[in-house]
Each structure stands twice: as structure tokens, then as C-alpha cells.
Length: 238
Image 1 (spheres, rainbow, N blue to C red):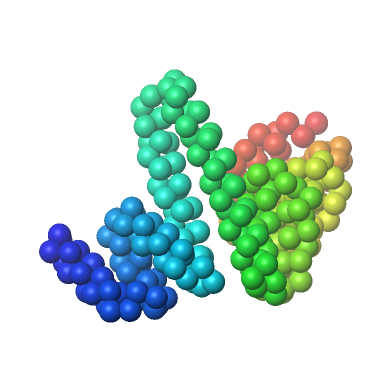
Image 2: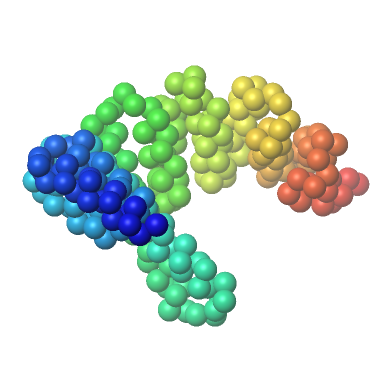
């Protein structure tokens, strides 16, 4: 328990104290702090380290991740409190401010990482996600289009591209991307049904109800309990 926790921190601290600009030792101590729930100590350590060695990608990346984690933790706490006091306007305002701060931090961090590693398409995919969340749809589309060039990322990237086109109400372009994703993922598992559902939604928004119904029925015959697919089939069947 507490003794083991103190020992782990002490060992990592001693190693770091011998060589305070060693990024491996900084990262290890930060990780130990984080695992033991000492987020403030981790934040202090990484903030100081970033000032000392501003050119270290590893330190800057860890600091960014930690700032995002701290936002997440606080948001979880607020969400829990809101369950018991849903009318608390102060809490709701605080959540809105914090969510917006988290998005800004995420955009800043992933934009910086993409600049540092322009060929890392996984980073572009992450950047695209945070841009889309923040309503910066065109920039998100550009990031997803680049990420889709990597065959390992194509499925996720084209799915996100579909969501981005749908956000711009370009439902025909969205449907095209969902078809592309379904071609890559042919099984009707949880993910497959999600892709078919997104496609059906896009078709419905395009006004081709019969085509949408066909796709909804495909999910319906596979799993009647998936989302609101039973109501969809009901309402689209004349």
C-alpha cells in the first residue's frame, strides 16, 4: 500500500536526482507519480523539466499528455457531481469552460507534434479528431485525408472523414466514405453495424429513404437491439 508507493517514488526520485536532465529518468519519475495519483507532483516535475530542456520532444509530449489527463480527471469528477445535482449551473459552466480548455490544449499539442513529425500520420488522425470536436471541420478533413493514405489507418480515417462531411451536410460525400469503410471492414460486428448505421443516416439525410431502409434492415436482421434501428425500420416502412 502506502509504503510500497513511497518506495517506488523514492527510488525514481533518487535516480532522477543524480541526473536531472536525463529525459528517461524524468519520464520514469513522472510516470511513477502519475501511477500513484500524485498528478500535481508530476505536473511540477514536467513543467520545470520543460523549462530546463525546452528542446526535448519527449518532455514536452509528456507534459501535454499530463495536462490533458488532468483535465479529463477533473471533468470526470464534475460529471459525477452533476449526476446528483444536475441543476447546478455553476458546475455546468465550469464543465463547459474546462471542455473548451481541454480542446484548446489538445489542438495546440497535436498541431505541435505534427510539425515535429510531419510524416507520422497517426498524429494527423489524432489532430483531425480534436479539430472536428472543436468544430474546425475543414482543417479536420485535411488531416483525415492525409491519414487515410496509410493503409493501417485508412478504416478509421475514412470513417472520421464521413463524420466530418456529414457535419458539413455533404451527405453524399459522407456516404461515399462510409461505403469505402464498409469495403475495408466487411463483418457485421459492433464496428460493422456502426458503419452501416452511419451510412443509413447519411442516405436518409440525402432523402433516399428506401436505400436507407435497406441498410437499416441489414443491421435489424443481425441485431434488433442495435441503437434505435428497430424504430428506424418501423418509421421508414410504409
